[in-house]
Length: 237
Ligand code: C5P
Image (tube, rainbow, N blue to C red):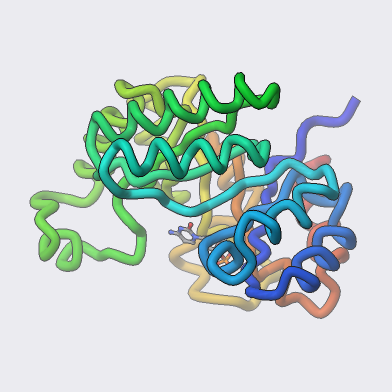
């Protein structure tokens, strides 16, 4: 029996035909598909269904952040599609996190599908120390990440999105059952980006990441299927 593949490939495109073609080529080589705002605003729920219809686990990454009532209503739409994972912002607060997680479970039960794992973004990794301070997150970013991770967990979230460099600290704080979804992954052979800020898939896994979000190293590769196959082999799958 093979272990579950932790890789969710980010199909960052506005074109549904492109996303469907990529998904078909990567079926069996990745653990699931991530669709984000770029895809959703171009193609809507119908476009999401074109991909979910292929039957691969789906991560709908819309990073919801609004008043609790609005987030709950939006979350019901996500749950009905049958997503495996979806995202909210922890900084929306305790009531918003609770509303999102309650709505996801309630709507999935009504629709007769599995509830999505609701994972919370803590501090966007695009914010550096100065950027985080400018929006009111005083103190070291690591402390803010830990505080927001705890808030998310206390209010029913299934996990958080965090950088590979935060995995160990959050795992120590939140325990083994908390899902750590980790972007910023670069295979050693990948030429995209600044290697120093990333970990390889195997390194991130060894630190305790549950889900590896990988975009350009797969979809911008000359042969995406071959890139996914190499990553899978590196993970011992
Ligand atoms: O960099 P790469 O192409 O591998 O990005 C994969 C995905 O991870 C993208 O969809 C991006 O939106 C997402 N991401 C994220 N949080 C970050 C960095 C990237 O959700 N801090």
